[in-house]
Each structure stands twice: as C-alpha cells, then as structure tokens.
Image: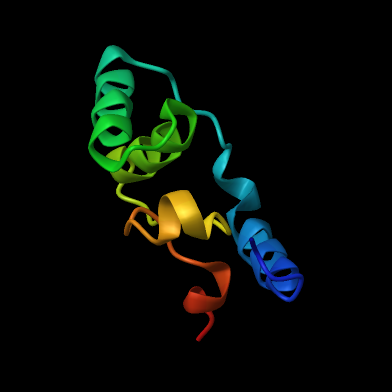
Length: 83
C-alpha cells in the first residue's frame, strides 16, 4: 500500500505530464503486448496495459502500485523520480 507521503510526489509528477493529452489508441499490438506482460508477471491485463502503453511510448511508468508494478520492475515510485 502506498504511503500517504507519496501523494504530493505523485501529484507533482502528474502536473508535469498534464499537457501530454493522455490519449492512446488501443491497437492490436498494444493489447497483445499487455496480455503478454500480464501473463509473464501474473498481474491483471488492466495493470499490464499501463506498462505496455508506457513502454510503447518510450516513457517510464510511475505508479504507487508497489505490489503489481513497482516490485516487478514495470514502474517507478513517484519518490524515485525526485531529483
């Protein structure tokens, strides 16, 4: 479970990303990649879709989901991005 102290860090990261549009088409390639990630890491396709989308876009996924994403190397914690 994420620490309450993570919220300000997460909000700061979200603010920096606010202008990117946030829309990504659900293509066959993206959905296939998400299914593969879900199977390989034993996580939901929903969570895996975030990892697949960030990878496809060449971006780093930021999440407070330590159990399913961060611990498996699929995402970074917001606090890990602070300089």
